[in-house]
Amino acid sequence: PAHGSGPRESAACLVHYLYRRFSTHSLGSVQNAKALKAKKEEGNKAFKEGSFDAAYVLYSEALTIDPNNIKTNAKLYCNRATVGFCVLCHHAIRFNISSE
Image (cartoon, rainbow, N blue to C red; front, side, top):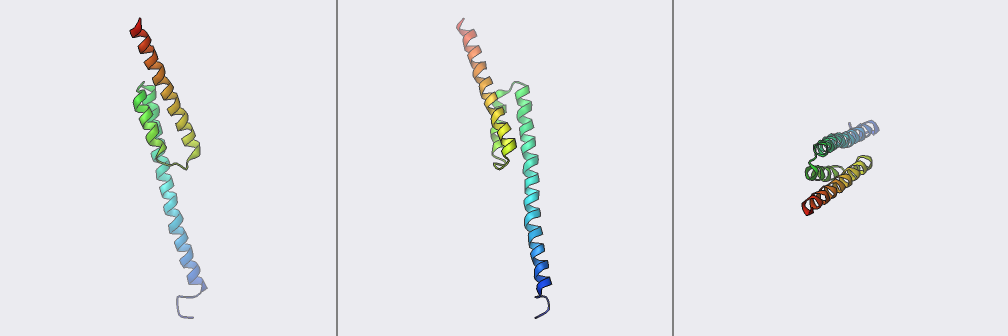
């Protein structure tokens, strides 16, 4: 065989390819996880401040970051539903007060 085309070189080439392929994927996953956590925390902060519309938008944006993160997205859907309920309650209370 010609120099550089034996089984060792092929194996080294495969290892190099796999390293590049999966280390890039892992880096992307880490970046997504950080972005997702940051956006969720922004939503939590807005919720605690009573900015329900902003919290709803932030939770919705967070849901687009990593659709495969089932655990965090489940929490985001619950948080967003809670915000939606709070908005409805807030509007109902305002309507009731203005009707009196």
